[in-house]
Image (cartoon, rainbow over all chains, first blue to last red; front, side, top):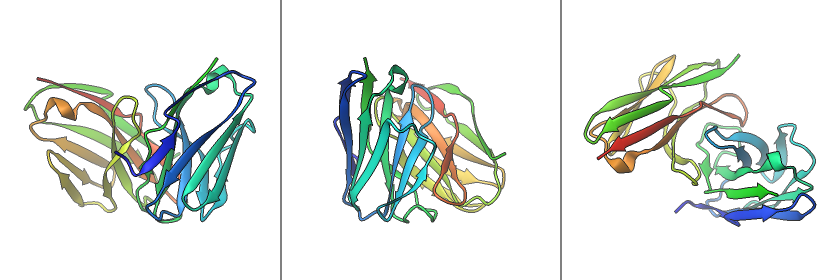
Length: 115
Length: 109
């Protein structure tokens, strides 16, 4: 079991739907991350929140909208996604606020399928 | 350009057959090298952090080492449950991790 919890584990949605992915950590970590991972590829960084503020957006399309309601929670709001957005979406957190050298700890992801 | 290369892409071992995975990097300003294990359908599981050349870390059958240009993950007497994809990542300035493509390890009983 990981200390970063992601829900739901699986999500199937149509291209016109709106849904949200959720991530929670209670390790007191001050940086949280969203990654996208395609099959047999390494994770690709999407967003970084440092001390609850968005610090990095890796030129992600606006159909993905992150939100950090507090230091323990991270959401990813999805709207009008494309079939190529189907992937494993991973959340991670690190103790150092994102600017140090501490490891990132990952959740088990949400498997997203776009019909 | 900063780059992380893992080799081999895939490795098949018999149970008990020791071997090593390689992660070479061409980066400046390394702030940490990280090894992760990823099982199918799961997120990467953190294994080790190495910060400076000459550093070594061990955990059960795994030992990670670091030089100025590469890191090795040594697997001693592997078991089938060690089968997974092993990812290497380097952290430069800021928040970004640069991942290698991974090595898919299969250990046959």
